[in-house]
Image 1 (tube, rainbow over the protein chains, first blue to last red):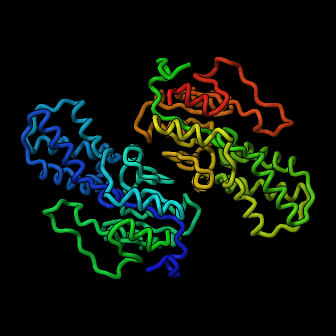
Image 2 (image 1 turned 180 degrees about the horizontal axis):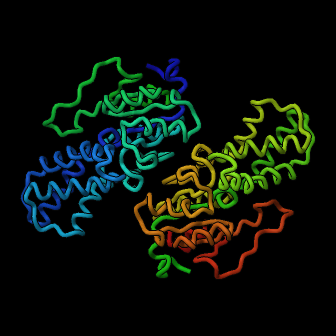
Image 3 (image 1 turned 135 degrees about the vertical axis):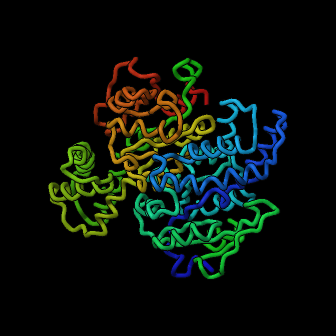
Length: 242
Length: 242
């Protein structure tokens, strides 16, 4: 598909899911956990630990959505989950500073190899931004470290709603002063894109087969459900004429 | 003053007032008005016109603050003022598209000559962002056109309060997950800085003697009222060790 097709020719801004789509959260967190384990002499199955940490994320957001928890940003939710799984995995000997430092590992995620080059191309022609459940500090710190050249950091924290709540997708056209169909969401997750599409936003699915690690089954989605399907951000830039 | 002084050594993020501090709103708008006048054969005192446009800005924000107007962003307020002064100056012959295009001139303001280089230096060591009454679309479009390398666009629109309301200054440390004294506001306006200081934010005054044009009396402020006073963003970067 080319950006000159009617549905895509109107796109003026591309916003990106971040965890898994732009950055390799699992590989990055796993590396920090393994380094911590070596430094502190802690033995644990860090692969299961990181998967547990991420698995706690949807239920934690649901507790905020339901009102069981007052508004808590992702740094706060990551810390609640961390305290649970440190106990569950029987890990002792981490003091408060070490836990705080470990929790901030989510600010230090490495981008997929094609991400910075693809975003840099797209930025020449489009407004590019995050659209992430990550909080602003996390996204700003990550972008600075990784060189992600965002024009704008859109975060769930700005509307106090997590994706896939409609408020998150609608924030982008509202704040950019454009129509929903002039915005495209790029994500490696079909559910996120389906929710965006219901708000009139264009969608690009990018395959990230290694998001859950080399041993995991990658997400599979039906072709035809999105405005674009691409293998990486280089292909996305090409398809969008950037 | 050097950044190693205690009060400044703790600064981690610099946020910038935009109109007048980063960009030359008067010169930029005046150039667009004069070009429009030539193109359309409209004679007017464009210098008075641009000053009237800007002079309408504080009363318009006050109408929002008092509740006389519902929340309206700066694009909306600029348009209300424009419609008034077009009539006041007896300017005829502008259609809706031309008025919309003219109103968006505020998205196309040129930076002061030292701004991009100074910000680029500061960005290496600090988080840099806007802290402006301008709306998000205006600030994002301006940054893209002018090459302003913000890490984050903080806008009054995100908290639906205009400066100098405390909510605007407090948004920055809250969203960056740092303390107010770790934030510095840079502005060419003493009143903006005084209001920020009351919220615990550090302050840097930058002189912009041409903000109101070559014939106007520049703002004068007493020395000693700010953490820093500088002549331009190059001097600011040097003072902050960047």
